[in-house]
Length: 86
Image (cartoon, rainbow, N blue to C red):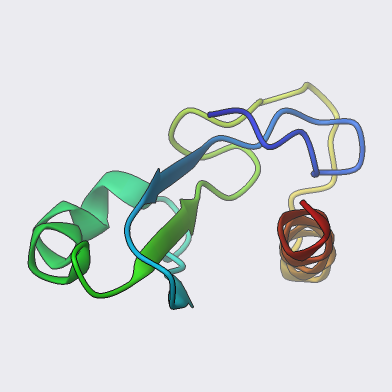
């Protein structure tokens, strides 16, 4: 699913689950697939959001983009705002 909330960049996220929600973030150089075993255990109890950080996994990798931790944090805040508003 392309959440499209990375300030004009395509942000890929995994989405599965139930009424209560949890946000799972991976580290730098990894991707949301890291959480696959956790999802299988929790998907009946939680709605699971696992966005890929910019430049990681299935998210966009635009040349010249700012991939700093600050930019990644801004993207995650935008993702949360867009997801809560949806």
